[in-house]
Length: 118
Image 1 (cartoon, rainbow, N blue to C red):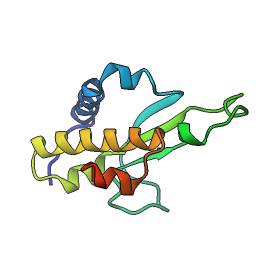
Image 2 (tube, rainbow, N blue to C red; image 1 turned 45 degrees about the vertical axis):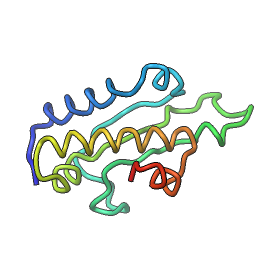
Image 3 (cartoon, helix red, strand yellow; image 1 turned 90 degrees about the horizontal axis):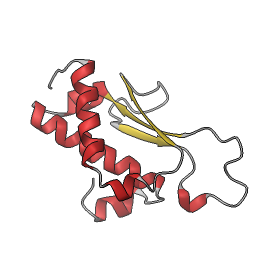
């Protein structure tokens, strides 16, 4: 387990987002990123992140009018418990960011695993 402050964790999330190619970030549509301490009670305790929203592949012409932003949430507690040191934490934050962005684009877990993004 590695421990960092909320500010250090959020800085690592910002660095992970900065590492995503700008042309990919430009394709995100109506997405907000959040950091929360722990997953909701109805989710597994070891959930590292979650995408909540409607993937681009499922949106139709009627989607969007008044729609709230999709949410990508990273969970600080599980990520810190999962990692042995700060370098591992930063790597896992980046993997989690990419993983959840992929869900926004309609890529499912099986395909992500096949691509090496566990």
